[in-house]
Structures are given as structure tokens and as C-alpha cells.
Length: 344
Image (tube, rainbow, N blue to C red; front, side):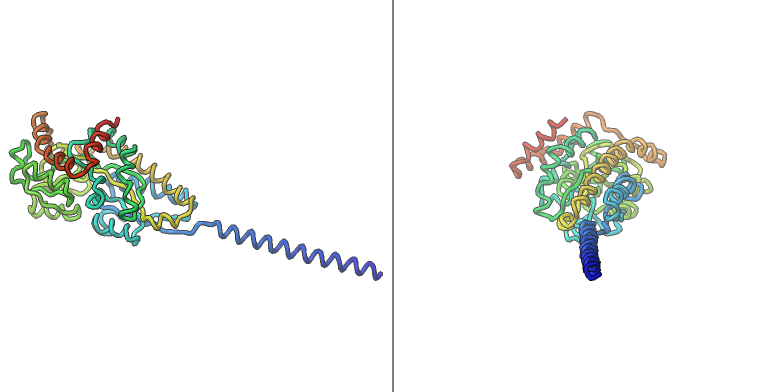
């Protein structure tokens, strides 16, 4: 009996030890699982486009749902369109500072990163296909190489705003018509100089102020792709569009560098994959929307002026001094222009 009691006691002791080990393993497993779970974040994405612009359609229909799905719900995306978080300068600064996680600026950074501005140099890109090939290839990567080190933002993908044209309350059908035209341009050196060389009196201002300036006749016209003319309602206060295609403006989807580094590999992959799908979709929407936008604006009473070859050449000749200046100022400029022209 004594032996039986000792054996029973041993079995109970062993069972207790095994139970304790199992509990520790379970706790360790639970702890490990908790450690591997991604931290949840809400990502604010700021831009200056109207809600129905191709940029916001692509952000809403592709980027937001794909990030949330691919991150397993650990990332939530909130889109702040139409200057809700301030104009381009405001929200770009906020992304740099990290108070806003992501943004979709134009080339506002070119004052500090001059290469970024090269893509907007006049009459350089031929069409949407050429523009996408340039920006999605080695040139696009080279343009963004200094963004993280100089501005603390991580570039994700390029997208299209489109080819810029002049909308105006006065007809512009010749070089003579540019003389004295009070023309709004973005507050970037390339566009200010371009407008001046064409003969206009240039008033730089952010997009958020343009409608009021046009309505109040502070300016006679402005330059933008026609998708912006439609989505921002400029057709209500403008009569003409000159299809000058004098420059191409892209956007770049950026994320604060420090925030980017905090994300897990899975979260970064989710954002990169969603960004690629957003970009491809947005390029498609932008290119396809041109004819639809043109038809809409014509129905609203706007008259389109297509420059003939002579007028086109006159505009191109007028801005040649810009290239002479760039080639003197930037050692990389001539090679960059040639790389862009050679891209197929």
C-alpha cells in the first residue's frame, strides 16, 4: 500500500509539472502571437483635387480598399480631398513634418530638389504613353532619389494630372493674344517663366484661390489640364481653352519617411502593392477622361482652340531660353532632357 501511495504521488507530481509546462508554452505562444500582430494605424492622405477628379476616384476605388484589405485591417485610410488639410504647400509641409502621413502633391519640392521640376519643362513629353514610360522607368526613379534625404518623404508612385492648357475669358489663338493676358500660373519657377516668355502677365497662386480670382476678374485665365477645369468648375467663369499642351504635370504619392520606417514589412508591402494599382488605374482614367471632359466643357459653352503647326512652333521657340538657362545652371540638365526624349 505504501508503495502504491508513493507511485500515485509521483504520477500526480509529474502531471502537475507537465501541466505547468503546457501552460507556459501556451502563454509563450500567445505572447509570441501578440508580438507578431501589426500595430494599427490610420493613414491620412491629403490632396488638392475635387472628389470626382480621376486622382480621388483612384484613391477611393483602389488605394484605400486595397491597403485596408492587404494589411489585414491593421491600416485604415482616410482621404482628405479638395484642400481639406490646406493647399499644396500646407499639406506637403505636414507630410514632411509627420502630422499628416501621406500626400499627393505636384512638383512643389522642385525649389529644393531641382531635378523634380525637369518633368514639367515645356513641350518635353509627347503624350500619355511617353509620360508614363518616363516616370515608371529609370528616369522617374532618378528624379526622386533625393526626396527622402532632403525632405524626409518616401516616394511611392507617380500618377498623372495631365497636359496643361490655357483656359481664359479672352480668346487666345495667337502669340499676340498672350500679350497683356493676366494669367494665373502655379507658384513654381518653370511655369512663371513659361507664362512670361509667352508674353502674359503672370500671377502665381495656389489652385485653391483660382476660382475666386477668375470669378472676380483678378486674372483673365489660368493653366491646368482640362480635368481640373471641369472638376474645379472653372467653366462657370471661363469661355475658351487653348489646347497648347505646353507642359505635362504629374503627381507623386508620398509618405512620411519616419512613419514608413515604423510600419511592418507586411504593411509596407500592402501600401506598395495598393499604390501600384492606384497609379495604373489613375493613368488610365486620366487618359480616357480627356475626350469626355472636352465634350462636357463644350456642352457648358466653352470653345476649344487647337493651335496649328505655326502657332505651336512659335510657342516652342518662345520658351527656348528656358532650356539654354537650364543647361548652364544644371550640369545634369542636357543629359536628363535627352534621356526623356529617348524613352519609348
